[in-house]
Structures are given as structure tokens and as C-alpha cells.
Length: 116
Image (cartoon, rainbow, N blue to C red; front, side, top):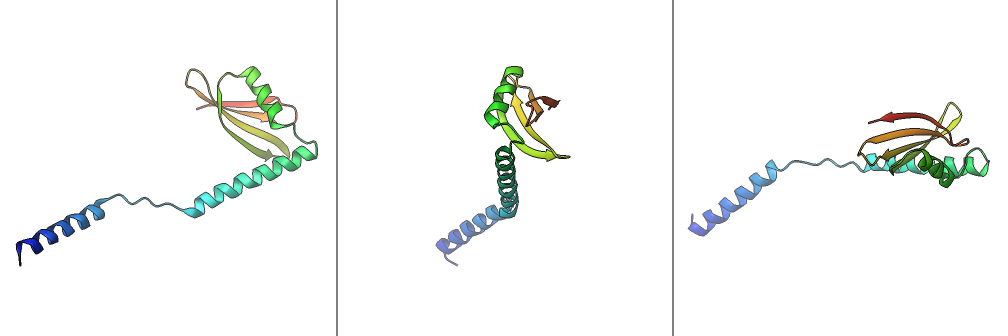
């Protein structure tokens, strides 16, 4: 075997070995589809509840929360728990502490909190 062919063969073997050792990232479109479907369902439910007067507008909820808790909102989820409409709001406080609060979507009252 010529020196050039051996060199090419070594390079190919090294590349193959490198690919074999690379971590495999299993990405599932199905998982993202489920998350997207949940988000869409939450938005539909919130919009429908707002039209029916069962909840207050999100802007009002956020304003009420900001009056009581300092920090930046990093996530908001809408859910129904035993017929009660609730916003779960995650806030990162100036200290870096993350707190998750539950807010009654009709009364704007904070009904629970949990620190992470």
C-alpha cells in the first residue's frame, strides 16, 4: 500500500473514531410538540376565561404581583385547579433567589408561594 493511501486510511479511521466517540444528542420533536400544544391550550383557556369574565387581564395580574414582589418575571403558566383559574409566576428576585407564586386569576390574590 502506498504511503498516500495509508495516510488517507489513517485519517478516515481517526475521523470514524471521532464520530463514534461524540456524544449523541437525542432530540425529540414529539417533546417540543407536546410543550407547544400545552402552551396553545393554556392560551386558549386563558383567552376564553377572560372573555367570560372569569379572570382578570394578565397585565393586571402582573401589576398586582409587582406591587408585592420585587424582581423579574421569568415564566408565567396558566392553569385550572379544581375549577379555580390560577397563574403560576416565577420571579427571580434581586438577590438571585427564584420564587414561584400562585395568583388567583380573578381576585389577583397571591394564594401560594414556593422558593426554589
